[in-house]
Image (tube, rainbow, N blue to C red):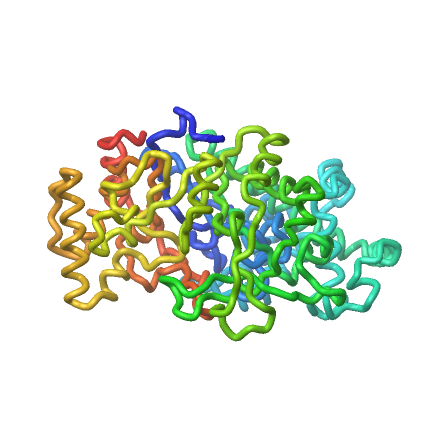
Length: 504
């Protein structure tokens, strides 16, 4: 099982989430700047734009914690395009303008939905396209969940009245009939999101740029996914979590990480023929050109921690679905364009799953230079069927990492970088932090990986003020935004390397 084709081999991409695009509206959107970024990528022979999950975020603003795993984030709907469609006035568009800088999710929550409701008030719900969208039922659970959530003061579904908490069909249908306007508002939000996304994706594909997007392994507990499918998760009779997802102590966090997500009842999924998961993967493959499965190792074995635990130290490893999930999925969907995020604690089981699936795993250069010449992330040890990154959205930027090192640590790091440069016959000067950053970019694009992906922060040599996420922490995550797109000088350096190392 493998999806790599000759068309895909030796290509390059840039990692930048939609939320991090610069612009006037407090967060990146599917508007003018997104199209300008496509043009920059296309001009410089960059074949892939990698983004994080496009989902509507919930508590904590993480794209890995959504109210619905197949939803679209309403904040990405561009106000200018709504005005173009006659749904907003000039004055209302200006009211959506927010200060430049990091995303202020509180301000967005307080202003953006009000703007979308104004747009909805002018939207014709009787149009053929919208009626077909609603009739298809793709977002019925989502729209129903959001309507009920509003009726119950935004409480988690486990706190709703009994019949609604347990999704009693007759009463829920009666509720929807009595709240059809609100239900249609949430359908409208998804209709507009997917309309704008389809237009952006079509433009990118036409210009030779494909999208890599994420499937988070887990879904949020407070979500339409769990409410509508409680038997697929490990819950008690009161629909409370008995266990939660996380990872044991690792590179990122000494006490491990408690993610809080509910765990899957994999026996129930298998009995259903993995219907829910196959629908999810099918939707992702329609949304993106290539799908990255986050926390891939959890499909071999996953880490379970008791609900209410203070940390993730005392958990246990349990078996996941392994290859049976992908065998059934491929039987129904055919060849799967998937990248496996195989980072973290790896064992023989994960390595076997990766090999059997044929999916490319990930190689992170920031993990490479620890003095171990057998380190699998070192450029000289990387195999073709892989995706090489300088770092991911969970890492420091290269510049930020260098600034965090003590003089002795930096000296050792640069020594190891110089060793790999010599092994790869890349005579580059390492006389400054920017020189080291460019050396990692060069090694990423030169190495044998079929794919090479560069975070935009590393292309622009930005420090940790522009870091996207610090795992195991709360607060200032997911808010990074550029103040400008990368300029011609920054991109020309990358473009020349793409040509030199045959990634066109």
